[in-house]
Length: 227
Ligand code: C5P
Image 1 (cartoon, rainbow, N blue to C red):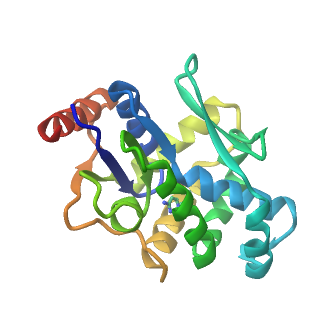
Image 2 (image 1 turned 90 degrees about the vertical axis):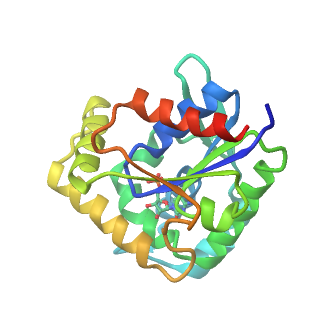
């Protein structure tokens, strides 16, 4: 089978990473979570006090980029990816609501996107990769052999996120999460630099009514049709 690039884009919390991860595992491909990369930059900005009332000090964030090294490690046992900032495991911290609430403003900064996209393209050199995000099929890999655009209703997405966080023991409120999901959709879809939009050649997958297995089977079938 020939190796391809698989680009998965879509709205916040609609299961992109779950699907991308299991697809990569099934195919023996590398998985890259680009949202985690924007979250790491946001975490650094929060730690250094470069964000006030959700408004980042753009210049400080840009200057700080050179000191941020993002790496991933695949945890075979847990079947999940772990994200590192300069060697520090920040996987749990970048998923917290404070980061979620500040990540969209950070990801509107053109220089931040430019640097992240550069790193993402490096990962795709050898193909055999599944990457998920907002602009993978449109900007990062416009020539990807398979593009999938995932979505589900905001309520279903907020409900899934709520379960995920409460299972981890976080004390969160459903309304707050729903507001966050809808707020991120709005900023992500309307920003000037690489807004979230479906690439013309992306296949749509609305998973509101689908199980994880059904989604994976659908995607594997699409891959087999090409490779
Ligand atoms: O995928 P996840 O929800 O973790 O992404 C967090 C945020 O990072 C998104 O809401 C979006 O603002 C930003 N993002 C982006 N481009 C990507 C991936 C994520 O702007 N390729």
